[in-house]
Every structure is written in structure tokens, then in C-alpha cells.
Image (cartoon, rainbow, N blue to C red; front, side, top):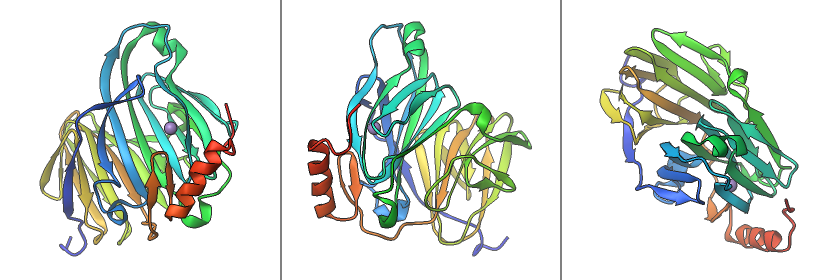
Length: 289
Ligand code: MN
């Protein structure tokens, strides 16, 4: 393998201090379009990770009430516990441990995100990830869509002590069930024993490895829990060594080379489109729950 072919780390991004999103999600921002050059992480916009946290049983609804989104997709992973979602596009459902909900806000939705009623009643360990994926200009105003995927919907393969769960795109020959608007490959890797992952990506694509537990050796550099390895765009081969209990989410995608204008829950291409989004939301044009 020549150096020209194997990817190097461009930068290691460290998780932010934890903060509450609503009253249910105690998260660290692992990367964000607000602190990185948006093109360097495109088509991904940001990722919040709520590491495992114990919640006492409650009758309350913990999470985030009614709020809008336009112009991108929210991808929520129930790492542990279960989450209820309901949106004005008619989408909704409950995902359990290992499940993923891929919501295309497109032209606009109003939604709510809560710990599920059944989880709240019993309490326990709760952990989740929310990733924002950008839409290209031509699809920003697409009709909202909801994909609710549970653990059994994903192919899980084992390769030399590493468990790979394919979410979108492909891992070698195995395809993930989530549909995306631009080419995206996404998988989770969990080391049952020490092992390694060898994977190929397209030259020029964006690749990030979000380390949520343990440690990995990526292109010769150690990456620890709470860190994201943002790779250089050149090169096709990735070789990652994982130590037992290492767990990461790999994100790979074709960059969307368009301007990013964002304000709170809206991600568009221009300031005018953001102002229009605010106006449309206030006028109730993104619907109601
Ligand atoms: Mn939301």
C-alpha cells in the first residue's frame, strides 16, 4: 500500500463540554459546521453524542418539544434506550436500542423528540447520537420523509473480532437499508476482541470516524473516545486497528460543494432562504403536530 493510496488524518476534533438539549439529551457536540470549515465535513453538518447516562423512572416527557427543521436531514441513533418521534409530515414512530431514525426535513417539518413513554417509566441507561446531514440545493425543498429502522433491519457482520453494522451505503458487499439523497456510506464498528477494519473509500470523499468508546489506531494515530478523526480527502484505503471494546461510527460521503447558510434549526444555501424559512415556520407553513 503506497502512501498516496492510504488516507491520513487531517485533524482530530475533540468533543465539546456537555450541554442539555431540551431536558432529555445531555450531549457533547463531536463536530459542527460552526467550528469546522463546512466543506471539509460536507455532506455532514454536525453530530451530538449523549454518552450513557442513568435516568430515574419518571412520568414526565423528557426531550425536546415541538420545533421546526428545513433543508437537511436529522439522523438519530438510539444507542441505548428508546426514543419517540412525531412530525408534521405524518412521520413518527419509536426506535429502540440499536435503531436509527432518518428524518428528511426537506421543505420543512415541525417535530418533537422524547424518551419513549415505556423507557421513561422504567428509567435506566440512555444514550443517543444525532447527526445532521445536508441536502443539496436541488433537494432542500423535497417532501419530508421518515425512515424508521430497527436493529433487525441492519446487516451485522463479523470480521476478525469486529462487529460491523451497516447503516447506509455499503460496507464491502453488504448494503445498509437507509436511503440518502447524496452518496453516503455509514457503518458502526464494535471491537469484540482486538482487531482491524480495512475499508476503501472514494478518492475526494469526506471521511470522519467518530470514536464513542475505547480507542482506535487510525493511520498510525491514536484516537480516543470523545474524539473525531477527520481524514484528508486524498487516498482510498483506510486501515484502522481497534482495541477490544473500541466503538466508532464511520461517516463517508461525497461533499456537497455549495454555500451553507444556517440559523438554528434551518440549513439553507443563502441568507434570503433562511429568512424565508423563519417566515414560513412562523406562518405555520411547516405544519403543526
Ligand atoms: Mn429536531
